[in-house]
Length: 271
Image (cartoon, rainbow, N blue to C red; front, side, top):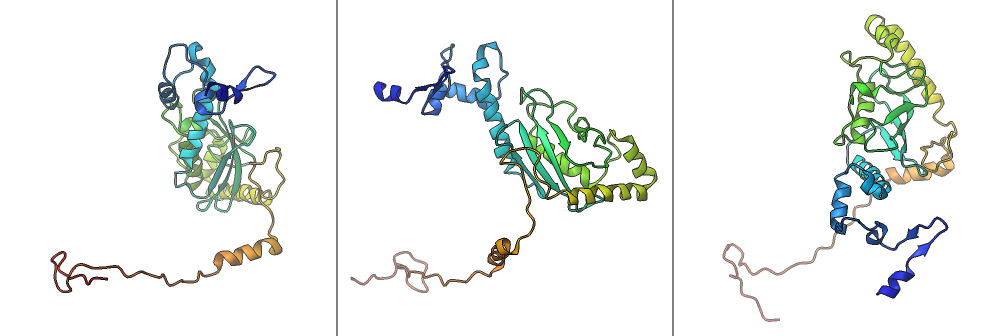
């Protein structure tokens, strides 16, 4: 066993060792903690101190992976989010607004996690196109997350941040402090002008749906124009009614006499 385990170890130029199992990946613990205790510590999101700096990369990767897995269990409609293939601290997103003044808008955005995630404050959300909204900075295009997450706690989840992104486009909350004072002023005092500005933003977002990505990342969410030769057969396949197949049921055996509730009341004929 010792010889076979050593064969699975490969050294590279950086002095790092690649192991064949999760048990081997974790570096040795200086305080003789078991591997199970180490896993529990990872799940509990411990604060990375000088004594466990060697685990920081694994802790962060686990935290980000668990956040994305949890995100997939939520009922979030009209919004798509995926981490970058090259950088797990960068997430790509697209929001399809289905109701309200921003209905029809297709807004791309990015979520940037802090370097010391899950610590480091609330992840930053920035939109790619100009959006006239009280909670979005016109110059930086960043979302004002402080009104919802004044303090980002370890109990907060990224899916909650995404829920907030959806919420601000459904209804303008006048109770929230606005980062775009001009947008809020128009909404309160000149709703028609406000809606005209919003329609311009919605139309610009639609016009840019098929723009090529500005980053080279295979997880960047792209859209292609309709091609009948490619997509029409797929569409027909989706809408094609399923053929109902008659299920073949096998008759079983009963040991209850018809009309009786007494078990084993039916005489079984010898086969």
